[in-house]
Image (tube, rainbow, N blue to C red; front, side, top):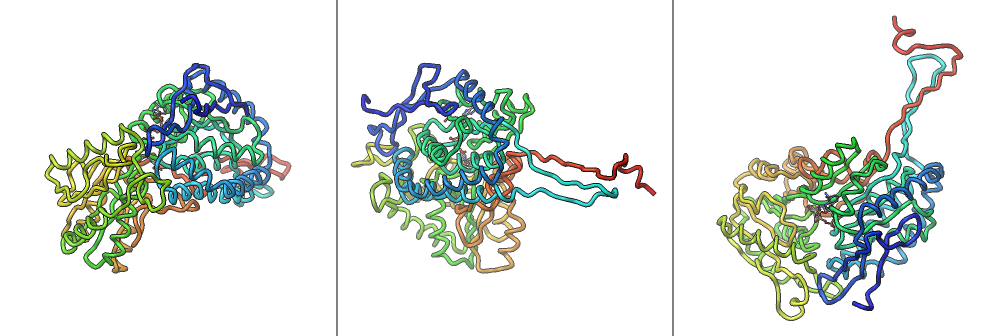
Length: 498
Ligand code: NAP
C-alpha cells in the first residue's frame, strides 16, 4: 500500500487533492492484492471548484474556431495510437477485460477522436430560403457551457471519449466523474487530451462515489447538461434530480439483448456470435447477448453445441496470453450474478453449464465466474427479463418467427438485437420490427462503430443517442438566425400574405 500511486483530481489544469481529505483504493479485479492506485474520495466542494474552473475556461474555449479545436482532437488521436498498448494494459489491470478487448476500448476512443475532429470542419447547420425578399436565414449549433459527464466502469476510455469529444468539439467545457472502479483510464484519456494541447480547465476530473461526487454535479446550477451512462436505477434518479433544474439530461442505460436463431440459420456462425456476444467482456456490456431466442427445431442442438464451447472458454487474468474472459468487476457484481443463477434455478430454468464462482488456483485471487448457460427458459422469467451484467445467457425456445420477434421485444429494454437467418425477407422484417436502437443481421448484439448513432429505446434511454453526428444534439443547441438586408421592416406571415 505504501508504494501505491496517489492520483489527485484535475481542476483548472492542476492536480489537487480532494477537500474531503479522504481517498479510496482501486484494485485489480483479477488479483485483489494488486493495487491500481489511490484516488480522491471527492465531495461537493471539489465539484464546485471543478465547475468554476470549467466555467472560466468556457469563456475562451467557446471562441476557439472549431477547426482549431479539431486539431487538438486529431493530435490526441495520434497520441492515443502511440500509447494504445500501455493504456490497454493498464485498463485490463483496472477492470479485468482481456487485453484484446481493452485494445479495442482504446481504439474506440481513437476512432471517436478522429471522427469528432472531422466534425470540427463540418458541424453542419441549415440554410433555407426566406419567404421574404432580401432576407437570409440559417441555423448554427451553439455550445451549452459546462457539461457534467458521469460514466460507468465497463468501457472506461471509450465511454468518456463518446461524451467528452463531442462536447469539446462544439465548444463546451466539462467536468467528468468516472466510475469509482475505473478512474485510471479516464486519467489516461484526459492526460492525452492535455498533451495534445487542450487548455487548462477545459476538462476537469473529479473522482469519487456516485452519491457524494456524482450527485453534486447533477445538482450544480452552472451545469446545464448531464450526460450519464449507467444503470436504470441511477439514471432515473439523475433524470429526476436534473428535471428540478430543467437540465438537459441524456441517459444511456441497460439492455437485455437477444440473438434470434431461426431454423434456417448458419448454426456455426450463430454459435460464434453467441459466444462472443454473451461472454465477451465477461457479459458486462450494455449490449451483451443475454437471451438466445432459438427456433425449437434447432434449440436443443444449439444448446448442446454452445455448452461444449462454453466450457472451453479460457477464463483468467486478461493480461495472460490465451485468455478469452476476465473477471467480473467486483464482489458486489459477483453476488448479483450468483443471485440470478439461484433465481433462474428456482424459476425452473435448466442450468446447462457454469453457474458458479471459479476459485481454483489463480482464480482464487479475483472475481471469476464460469460462463453460464440456462436452457428451457420461459420469456417471463426474471433471468429473461432483468439485466444480469455477467457471463450468463438464457436460451428461450420458440415455435415461429413471429413469436421470436414478439419475445425479443417483450422486455423493458431496447438497446441491441440480432437475428441469424438466411432468409432475406425475415431479415428485413426483423430490421423493421425489432424495437431497439441497434439491430444486427447475422452478427452478435455487440460491435457498434463510432460513426453511427448508439443508444436504445424504452428503459435503455430517454431518446438521445451517443456517437455519430446524433451525439452533437446532446451537446449543442440550435440557434436560428435571420438577416434582413432589405433596409425596411418586413413582417413574417403578414407582409407577404395574399
Ligand atoms: P451505475 O451504478 O448506475 O453507475 C454509473 C455512474 O453513476 C457511476 O459513475 C456511479 O458512481 C454514478 N452514480 C451513482 N449514483 C449516483 C448519483 N446519485 N448521482 C450521480 N451519479 C451517480 O452503473 P455501473 O454499474 O457503473 O454500470 C453498469 C450499467 O451501465 C449497466 O446497467 C449497463 O447496461 C450500463 N451501461 C450502458 C451503456 C449504454 O450506452 N447504454 C454502456 C455501458 C454501460 P459510482 O462509481 O460510485 O457507482
